[in-house]
Length: 207
Image 1 (tube, rainbow, N blue to C red):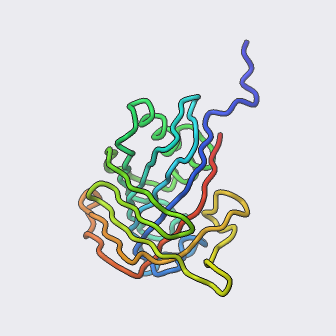
Image 2 (image 1 turned 90 degrees about the vertical axis):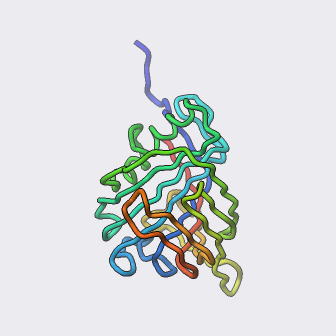
Image 3 (image 1 turned 90 degrees about the horizontal axis):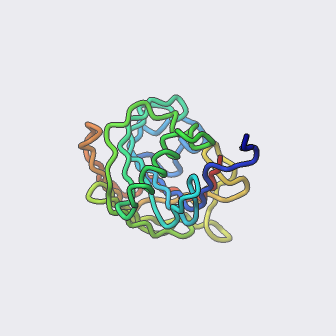
């Protein structure tokens, strides 16, 4: 019999980016109810390096466009999932297996907050962000331009929130000077805002 003790199904590291309709700084990040009671937004993960069951999935992205009907930790999110159109079919399935919670780990806890997935689609993803500043585009569905907050000694950071995925690694809050999101798949109005929440953080997932 072959031992599976100590084996790792997946290891992913990279950057996470969030934009939403909440005021900045988003209360969802500390487990509070969203501004206005509900939230429409996008969370995107860019995998700088990673493998899933031995398959290299580095330099690929996945995003969730979601409607949160209340407190984020209460779940029942309605979501559409967009996978980087550069993925091979094997990479696409591997990344979906992780981010839909099928392979366990901390990602499964996040996936468990989604009550309904209305669509899974491929899309061209543009993800350029560093220290909270950058851009995010997902096909013709999402477009965002991001600017970080500046503090007395540099960029404002958050530490160890309920959504932090690397202990001790800062999250960079800021605002989206432009945030457009199509609501058609979710049955929601289109979003076109500026000055609302943006957030960047690092992630490290393994199981």
